[in-house]
Amino acid sequence: MVIRTESEIETTEAGKSLGKSLLPGSVVALYGDLGAGKTAFIRGMAAGLGLETRVSSPTFTIVNEYLGTVPLFHFDMYRLCSAEELFEIGWDDYLNRGGVCAVEWSENVSGAFPSNTITVKIEKTGENSRRIAITFPQEVD
Image 1: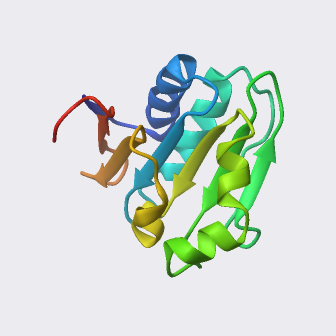
Image 2: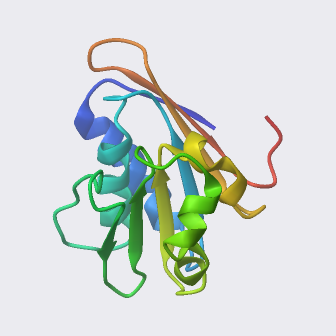
Image 3: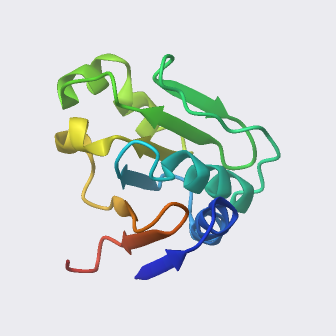
């Protein structure tokens, strides 16, 4: 599925739409350059999950936890270099907690994702416009 957005608000709304369809245990791997809109998309996912909280990038803390009926675990892997480092901080525990795991900078830990991972690739196509490609596990690229 490909979505084109023309503003940060539209990117957030695209995330909200995906968030409404996520189930406990879902893993969403996000890819995109710095400033592409990954955090805005995850902000929308949180809203779609019914979470009423301020979502910010966990660049320095590695993971932010947003608790609700279905919790959201928001990871930023920018500072990690391998999947092994992710497992060292308790990745398996997060996968088993019944929440949604959303991972920014997924390319740094690509070997850590289960086979049912949803992939979101966000590409800047202009100053405010984005191309968002969402691939669900049963789809083939």
